[in-house]
Every structure is written in C-alpha cells, then in structure tokens.
Image (cartoon, rainbow, N blue to C red; front, side, top):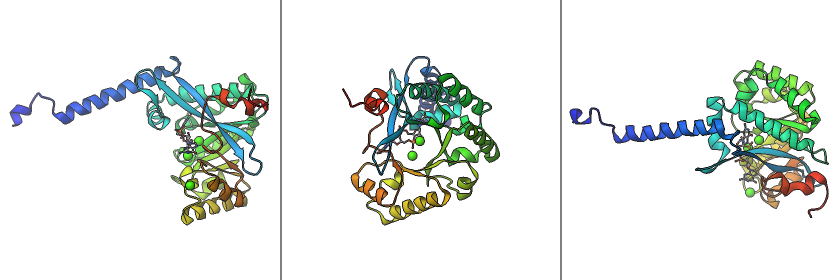
Length: 275
Ligand code: C2E
Ligand code: CA
Ligand code: CA
Ligand code: CA
C-alpha cells in the first residue's frame, strides 16, 4: 500500500492543493481589485434615536468579483490583512469616502472602518492628515471605527497614533463593543468619542433579559464616561423602543436603512426630498 501511494497525490493532498491555489488566486485578484474597479463603497445611515434624523453614514466595502460575484467583506478583509493588501484597500476607502462626504450639502459624519494592520502601519496618522487636506473634509466629520482587537497588538503604538489623529479633530469610535477583548481600561485610556454596541446584543434586546442587561450596562458605562452609544444592527421597532427607553443616543441597522450606493441617500445628504 505504501508503494502504491508513493508519487501519487492522495485525495486530501489534491484537495489541499485546490484550496491553496484558490486562496492564492483570491490573494492575487484582491491585489488588483482596486485598479480593476471591482471595489465599491456602500453607505449605511446612522440615526439619532430621539429625533430619528440621520447624523452620518458608515462606509462598508463591497467587492464585485468578475467570476465569483459579490465577495463578502468578512471573507476578503482577513485575507487582505494577512497579505498586507488592506493598506492599499484601506487608503482607497478613506480617500473615496472623504471625497464623497466633502461633496455633501449637509455636514453629516462619515464613519470608516480601520483595520489593525492600518492602525499599526507607519504613516497612518500622516495618511489621514493628507487625505483630509486633499479632499477638504472637515476633520470633525470623519469618524474612524476601531475594534478593541485592533488596539491590543501594540497598545502604546496604537495609543500614540490615535492621539495624533484625535489631535487633528478626527473622531474615534470603539467598534463591536462587547465582543472580543472588551477591556474597561482600554475604554478609559484611549481617546474614544463613541461606543458602538455590537449587533449580537442589539438583536436580542427585546427578547432576552440577559442581552437587555448587557445593553443597559454598556449604556451606563457610556453615561459614566461621557461617551454617546450607538447600537448596531437595529432591525425592529421593538429593539428601537427598548433603546429609546434606555436613552441610547444613536442607532444603525436595517430599520433605518440597508447599506447601499450613496445615490439612494441623496435626500439625506442634500436635505431635499427625493425627486
Ligand atoms: P461592522 O463594522 O460591524 O459593520 C456592520 C455590519 O453589519 C455590516 O456588514 C452591515 O452590513 C451589517 N448590518 C448593518 N445593519 C444590519 C442589520 O440591521 N442586521 C444585520 N443582520 N446586519 C446589519 P458587512 O457590510 O458585511 O461588513 C462586515 C464587516 O466587514 C464589518 O463589520 C467590518 O468589520 C468589515 N468591513 C467592512 N468594510 C470595511 C472596510 O472598509 N475596512 C475594514 N477594515 N473592514 C471593513
Ligand atoms: Ca464598523
Ligand atoms: Ca459589528
Ligand atoms: Ca430582536
């Protein structure tokens, strides 16, 4: 049996080979995706809960692969982070969204996700400065969304970078709060302007007493630290009612709008009713 197998690819080896090749292909395609025009940004409104008005948008990446179709960010962002392509991709998203937001009639905020790799790369603060200068976007309209996981790689370095960005007037939001390495000392030590509660808590807030307790606790934390809280993934009026009663400041989710091309939100960026 041993002799038989020698020199031949086992089923598992063959399958591994296919996976490795597929992965290399995606890495390769990802490197070229921006210049090939396959990447685009969709926008999702962020709303005040008391008045219901939109106060900004989160920018979310979409990759339309010519053969694979739409590749979800949860699939390609980790690959882009491992290969370093996220640096080019992240710079493209930042430039694209700041330029877009600078063209709006209303001074709404634009929230941009920043990966750990970007945050720890040399020159990130300079990049933000240059993009704001080039696009003319007022720094206070830019909000960088950072997860706690992104901070822990090198806390002193992340802190130094965020302080420099913050000194420009840019806002900083803690993303996905409650998942990962939630640490209260990070919340206190870092110059955050907002806490975003992860959708996994929001989703169950009207049905699970446990989720409700967690959300109340985060809201209390926000009050104590003087930080407004945004709840992600709000889908139902029941969830919104709970959040309103508990004095959560902002919400984002399908209830207010699904992520989409900015042209679908012109009534919000111009303040004029849809044509
Ligand atoms: P995230 O930052 O937590 O973004 C929120 C995700 O929740 C988005 O998924 C959004 O489409 C989805 N979502 C919003 N409202 C609802 C809702 O009511 N119900 C449900 N079920 N989902 C909702 P998306 O667009 O697939 O992005 C997934 C993740 O990929 C993001 O999670 C973020 O971590 C990452 N990502 C997306 N764009 C970028 C980017 O430009 N740069 C980086 N570094 N990461 C990005
Ligand atoms: Ca985010
Ligand atoms: Ca989230
Ligand atoms: Ca629910």
